[in-house]
Length: 228
Image (cartoon, rainbow, N blue to C red):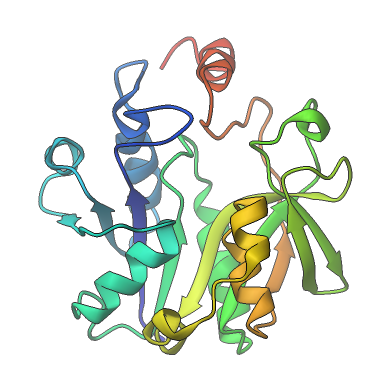
């Protein structure tokens, strides 16, 4: 198995425009995420639609254009452009996470080695998650996902580190986009509705963990990271 890591990062976030470039302490959000991931020691690429984001990363950035609905679509375009040639699997780390524990990368690889084509990590719901529609909640049965929604007041919290086989990415264009994905704005529903089982593993997150979706998340990060 040869793994690449891809961090999709688009400039025009609906809820927080320019999100990847928001300064958290001494550096932009996307740089926090990239620097954490690089510590795992795998080839890492930031896939973006904007040269301003690319300039923050440098040689490991790639411009991937198109009217794309989500990060997985950006990975699928990169796959079509042979960016992942020579790799067997790709781990997608969402770029709105200023902290990424490198153990999550190895947890994802462990799932992929068991033969799952698609994988997802999760943790317990954090304080305030049940009323926060920016947090995607996962319902699972044993080691598989059964549904995901932003509006649930129960379940588990998705940790947005996904593992994909390149075979999965190569056929992504052919998947039907279900109505539920448009309604829920949850890309994982496309995977489920097209018949893919999602292998999962529970992980722990540190106190103060936050993914950046809204201005209040920026303030939460500052509260717990005053020295960064």
